[in-house]
Image 1 (cartoon, rainbow, N blue to C red):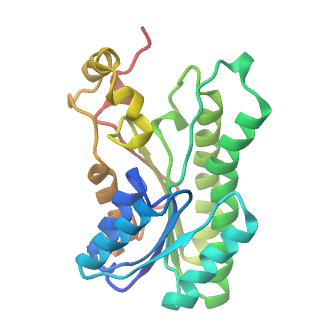
Image 2 (cartoon, helix red, strand yellow; image 1 turned 90 degrees about the horizontal axis):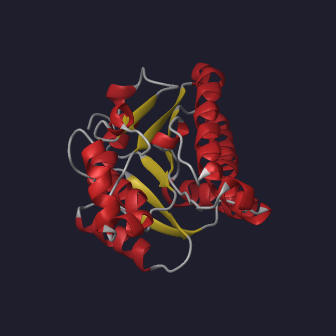
Length: 256
């Protein structure tokens, strides 16, 4: 895609699922990728191998985005290893199912910490570096259809994604004059490890698929292609928007 080759991207949660798909796609487009992960390193190493096999460059960084120290190190690594960072993809996310009246503070803090606090302060560190270097930049947040669509039993998740939407709206205005764009990509039901319970439950899957007009679950490639577009030069006049990748689910969804 236009203008991507040679750029540098930080992708959080790039060792699995959507983040891994995004990192691989950007790497295939000639982007140098900082592959962030937490937990076991195997997935991140697989991402790095795929990028290198495609002729790209990738650096693995183990960093917890809820840690201020790790956030700073993650951004600094991009500049130290590749001399810059042009693109930030806030992908890392978690969800926890519980009835609202049973949700514990620790559950709330974890979900909000990863899904909202993490992107807030990582984006801040990224933007500070851009300002110091007098550089433009691209920020893409991996949100969810649940930034707008109710999801009973997942109130913490919905609140975090709704907050991410307003985060993007506000920063589009504040960062626009600096040449920095920010957009959300909102996936629906995607084949990823986070949806393992759904994928292995035939009854739930059979109930969901008729609600998706395109009749299938999405893939990480469906999301990654859009992220690559939003990071390329052809998307330079797009900011403050959410792009839904859900096969039409939001337009057709209803609770039983």
